[in-house]
Amino acid sequence: QVQVVESGGGLVQPGGSLRLSCAASGSIFIIHAMAWYRQAPGKQRELVAHITRGGLINYADSVKGRFTVSGDNAMNTVYLQMNSLKPEDTAVYYCKGTIVVPSTEVYDYWGQGTQVTVSS
Image 1: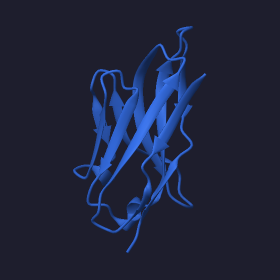
Image 2 (image 1 turned 45 degrees about the horizontal axis):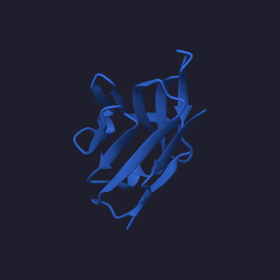
Image 3 (image 1 turned 135 degrees about the vertical axis):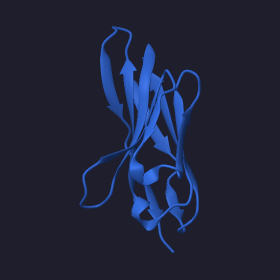
Image 4 (image 1 turned 90 degrees about the horizontal axis):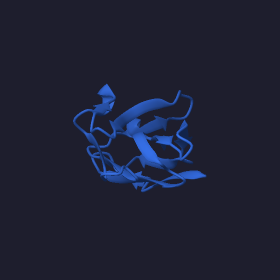
């Protein structure tokens, strides 16, 4: 059993900042990568940021220069620092872990999501 849990969402004014956290726990052998996605009402889920165990990072063009993804060495916990937030960043933010379980099989595990609302 593997659990992925996000936290840190909330209401923030335009131009403000939030930091989201994502914690993976349970029967984990190794974490290959973690990613943040978001889904706004009426829109498809989109990739926001991705970080691999080897330290490779990529961002959606819409958040480059404003969002920063980071994680601890084992990547059991990753963070998404969001600065200069805009109303269009309003969405439910999801964390996904690409995780190797003890049987050496690889699965994607999703968290339940955390709401981020940017509004004055």
